[in-house]
Image 1: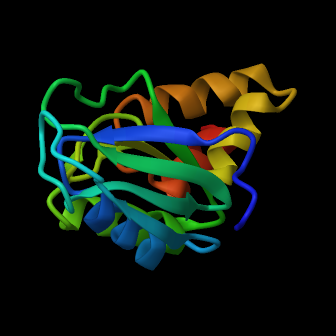
Image 2 (image 1 turned 180 degrees about the vertical axis):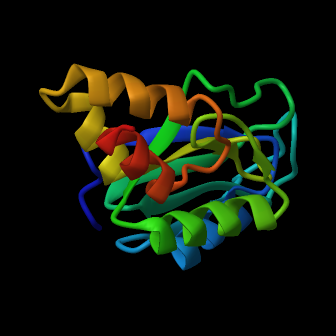
Length: 162
């Protein structure tokens, strides 16, 4: 028997934890679906034998998907923040999430079809925000505030200034 991770993120799904885990594993590197556990008996949102929990990893982070029913919903209070190296990678992740029944939000945020929030954040954006040039950071921040998916070229142009 494998020793479980000492700290695992548990994500509550109405149903569809296995489908979500498979989507994440197909979309992101260093991601995989592990054990799938079935309910040993009936429970308020399911029957004996239904998928109850799914062990999976997203970008190296151990997670447990729980098919817990409609009692709780995901919110923006929790999100995965994915650092991307360029526009191609930013587009790939954004388009995978939004194109699979998800929805766009603002400033690099989107939600997958299960309601889980994602921040698709180019490293270029983080670097300018955390850099010493506060005027460049302000210009990049102002540019970001007008975006849904982050446009790396527009962030770089804002960083350089007029």
